[in-house]
Amino acid sequence: MKSSAKPQEMMALYRTMCRIRAFETKVQELFASNMIPGFVHLSIGEEAVAAGISSVLRPDDYITSTHRGHGHVLAKGADPRRMMAELFGKRTGYCKGKGGSMHIADFSVGVLGANGVVAGGFPIAVGAGLSCKLRGTDQVVVCYFGDGASNRGPVHEAMNMASIWKLPIIFACENNQYASTTAMSYSTSVPKISMRAQGYSMPGLTVDGNDVLAVREAAAQAVARARSGEGPTLLEALTYRWRGHFEGDPQRYRTKEEVQEAKARDPITRLAAVLRKKRLLSAQLEQRIQKEIQEEIEEAVRFAQESPYPEAQEALEDLYAGDVAQAAKGGLA
Ligand SMILES: Cc1ncc(C[n+]2csc(CCOP(=O)(O)OP(=O)(O)O)c2C)c(N)n1
Image (cartoon, rainbow, N blue to C red; front, side, top):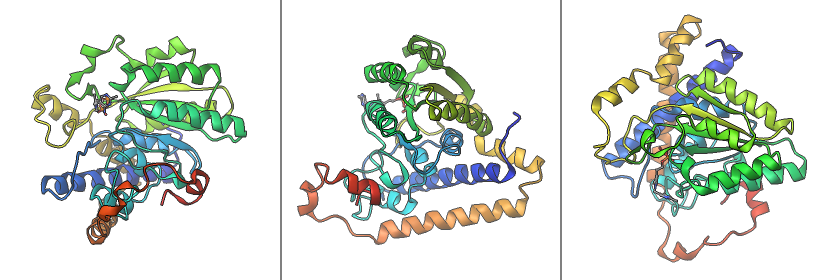
């Protein structure tokens, strides 16, 4: 598609997508070798959604994320070292090793939290949006969610409230076609989730979520509307998850052929082709970028491995919020 993104911005999109892919590919390997406890849900194949949306956000804008949140959080600027340490259950992680993959928050870059509760980000996003409005800042809030989450109650309460109060929120549906083992066509009353926007008097857009430039353009529109006080938008990005619902999922609900077909729509390969055509990406530059990213991820793994586990007596600490204002200034630690 035709895009207003400048060459530098397109290269930044490419780097962000490659970083997310490299981080999660490493997590996949580490999980398979029993280095990471708990559950991990990967967003490999869906990178264009987080990269495209975050590319039009400011550092002081907010996001709420989901159980499949590594990409959202990385794209918003979280530190991969503290993320990796959290996945390893180490004390240097974002939740001091007690939250894991699904609970990464970094208030210093506007990440209000990934969330293990499906649709759990909605009430938080409405609270944050109301706060932006009452404080008179022109910050916006992106509320990421999946197609499965769209069928839960809090989604509808939140969209209604955001609409009547004209809150600066982008409800960003990362539609990867499945909720765990359930296909969207089986469980959802509308063929397009963006149609639900009509019930809440807000614009609803559906874009190709594997085309990062299209996601960016649509997000820019929604963000401009939110910042100017016109209220929320429901933005649906159609994509696909290449991995199972969680690592280890036997995936009996879909065929290998379907996954193969989706891989042919790889958002990273697609942007790389555009960049090559515009002569912005040579083979040499591509190699250099991949090498830099690999080094960054290896460093994150080293940091995580060398960090200590929390002590047993720390188990009951941090169960209740401390000084939230202080946390907002300097991160959660
Ligand atoms: C309130 C709640 N119900 C059920 C679950 C179990 N669960 C975890 S992920 C998931 C599916 C979510 O699907 P979707 O919102 O489409 O996100 P995706 O996994 O596709 O990214 C379910 C049912 C949960 N974590 N929270």
